[in-house]
Amino acid sequence: MSLQDDLNNLAEDPSVVPLPVKIGVILFIMGLILFLGYKLFIVDDIAQQKAVQLKEPQLLQDLTIKQKRAVLLPIYKTQLAEMELSFKSMKNQLPSKTEIPDLILDISGTALTNGLTTEIFEPKPEIKQEFYAEKPIKIRVIGTYNQLGSFASAISDLPRIVTLHNIELYPEDIDKAALNSNAPTKLVMNAEIKTYRYLEEETE
Image (tube, rainbow, N blue to C red):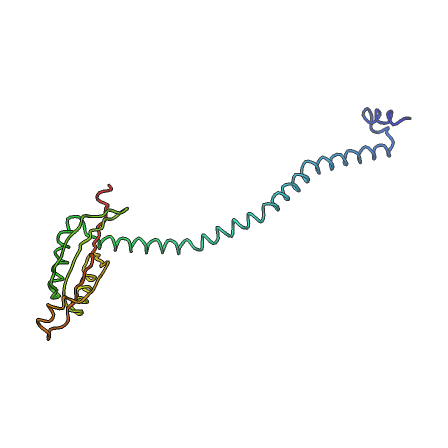
């Protein structure tokens, strides 16, 4: 009996097929199942594992970066809050447009209070920057070294931000000083005073 006859008998009546043929058919079917299972599942799993392994360094790097950001986030938030408070404090020290005239009077009065003689006190036009405006004031005052120092200190202590720039110091006219040789030597100070205001009201 040929193999073809055995296979035909297996399909019609398996009981008459010799045992070796039955075993061979069963082994073939099992092998086919294992092969298909390997191709469908194991090969795909291996490919996926290789893909994950290739991505693993990048994933670890991304994870490390995210962990560092997570650790630094509270610090960034604290620093941002401090910067906002600092900005708000500085903003509150900037006079509004309506306060500028009073501030100019305060500066002039500060010179008088400290015993200085004011020869020039000349407010200049505003210079607008990105979010604030400068108000320069050209001054020339005469006084002793101590009087000028007290004036500069008093300017910095004003409730609004006021700064001194382009300071020039030189002795007063010798002829005037000779009229009273016992008086302390006086100095002439040329300078530019700047105060600032926030432009928020004009950018809205």
